[in-house]
Length: 297
Ligand SMILES: Cc1cc2nc3c(=O)[nH]c(=O)nc-3n(C[C@H](O)[C@H](O)[C@H](O)COP(=O)(O)OP(=O)(O)OC[C@H]3O[C@@H](n4cnc5c(N)ncnc54)[C@H](O)[C@@H]3O)c2cc1C
Image 1 (cartoon, rainbow, N blue to C red):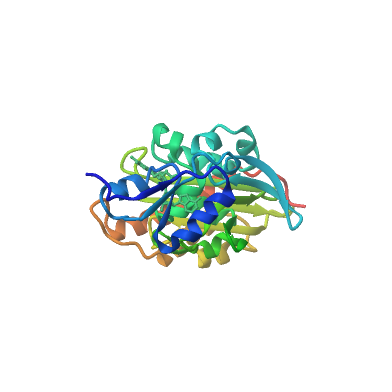
Image 2 (cartoon, protein in one colour):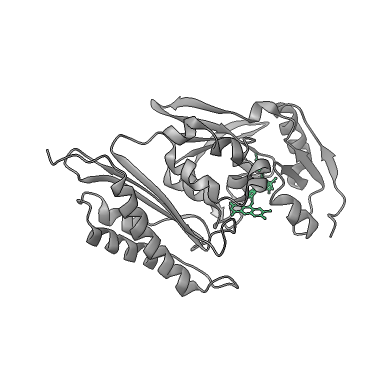
């Protein structure tokens, strides 16, 4: 299979890329690592007139500490490869959920080329990074010739494979806030083989106060809804409570109930719903175990 003809542009700077995207209107398409786009081109599921290759724009590849509105965190440039994030000691120390989830993205060869921006902009509901972006309440920085805007993760995924960005816009970076002390996190996935897309994946983040009460509990599920979904009812059920296995079982039940899985050749909807509940329970338990112990005050 071969892609249909297209014009090719390889800008060296972000402003140059934005100019080309603006000129291309709805017909331009960004090429990042090509791990999803090239198969789509070959299958003629995407037929852009102009391909805008970001691979020569060095300024889009970085990992750096960045404080936003007084909140410390890490900004990752869109063209940073998965593999760079996987091997970053800064990420391992400060964003452990991202470090735990990223080895689940395909295989090393895919992660050598695939980019953080490409994974998030592709908006695959079964992909690991969109899910982690949702749990950590990240923010996307999007640029166009008109300027820059920030999109919080909760507003970023409009629908399956549809990010809330326009064809003339470029996802420049994603930012993740650091989590407060006494936070435990966990990422769990069920796939047919390691490296396959998730049948279902769950990421959780659990924060306790000095009295071991949950002040913030976040649960996101991938592969079981049109977009990576937060399980709002399950989150509400654990907030303000003391952790227990019964509480987490109930959260798992509520999370499963809230999902809208579909059946396909890989798994049917009911199986996906069951797995979503079980993984939610297990991830909450694991996250809890990872919080440094402290006796009631
Ligand atoms: C065999 C195989 C297995 C895989 N397994 C997994 C897996 O288990 N989990 C998983 O998550 N992924 C998996 N992938 C996909 C892989 O992770 C891709 O790298 C990722 O989905 C897209 O990143 P990319 O940089 O390759 O983007 P590309 O393929 O270049 O682009 C993807 C889409 O995002 C858009 N885009 C890219 N960058 C930007 C930007 N900066 N701004 C705006 N739009 C942009 C493109 O226009 C395109 O629509 C797999 C791929 C293969 C080939």
